Each structure stands twice: as C-alpha cells, then as structure tokens.
Length: 262
Image (cartoon, rainbow, N blue to C red; front, side, top):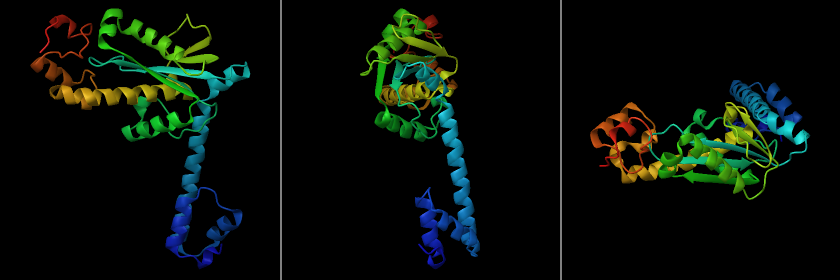
C-alpha cells in the first residue's frame, strides 16, 4: 500500500476503519508532507492512546475476579440491583458470569453511563457472558418483606437461577451469608468489579424498559423520565393524582397517605 499515492479522503477512511496499521504504513504517514494527513494521523494516534487507556481501565476492573481465579474459583458471578430507592415500580436484580478479562468498552457503574452506552453494553454482555439472569421483585413483595429483605431474596434467586453454577460470587454492598459458594461483598462494587458492573447494567436496562411500559399505562406520573424515583416532578404528580398500583405503599410519603389509590 503506497500512502503517497492515496488521496486524503482515502487515508481518512483507512484511519477510521483500522485500529492496527503496519509499521511501514505508520512510517509513511509520519513522513507524509500533507498537513491534512498529519492532522488525521495525529487524531488516529490520540484515539489509539485513549483505546489503550480504556482497555487498561477495564482490565483493572477484573482485579477481584483474578484474585478469586488464582484461588481456583473460575466461574465468578457478579450481582447487583436496580430500583432500590425508587418510590414506584419493581426491583430488578441482575446476575452475570463473564469470561475473566473479557473486554467490554466503557463498562462501569450503570448510573455513570448514558442510555446509549447502557443499551450497547446490555447487548454486548448478553453476547459474551457465560450466563446472565435477572429477577423481577414485584411491589407487593417489596412492601411485604421491606426493600432490604426483598433485595437479599432477589439476589439469592438470581444466583440460583444462573444456567451455570458459579464457583464464587461478587456482590454489590450487601452480604449473602447463606450462599453455598464463596462470596465477597464490595462497597461500590459496580464501579470496581466488571462482573458486578455488568450485573448492574442488566438490571438497570431491564428495569428502565419496564418503567417505559408503565409510563404508557400511567402517563400522568412521568415514569419514562424519572423511572419512579422521588424527583420534584414525580412528587408533584403524586400530590396531584395520588399513588397508582405500582407505587410502593411501604415508602414515604406514600406510607403516610394510607392505601388510597386513584
């Protein structure tokens, strides 16, 4: 490939479509006297540096998984929930077993990601994961057990329903002492463990999709926007319309209003 004979448009396409270039092509691009080619090559190098830093960051999220693997635990599940602090809608628990070291660009705590990033990662996780499961804990169960116990129950359920039995489990924040396999609870786990981060994304996307459907049934509350959390908009709607059937009666301020449903 003779870079000197290529047009700027052709070089731009080459650099856009390729993350790996031969040393000969890289040297030719460095020596090219065209200012526009120099700018394109500088942007390409910067993108490669950013990609390398992102790969290093993601691999750093497998620290706990690699420590467990070194002890003989090869199938490691991450577990997390979405919707724990919401005033309405179900709680969703996600559980994911990833191949250790699997590269998932941008993976992080689901709350730190854009909707587009979460959607991309949701499908990417489904494609590469060894096993994925999510559990829906309905409003009645939350009100009966309380949110903490409902979370614990859902986590046990999600782990037990994984198609592959994990050798160890990493959990976001809460302990699960009755698990039969080794487990470790990590504070802020969805930001420090790729497995927990993946579980948080699965749970978040599944819950957001459900709240979008509830928004069609109860459009006056704005569930599609705030997903049931206690925003100013949601609280105003509650004051105006009262609670509907997906509001959690054990949560304030709904609890103080009694069981009136409009």
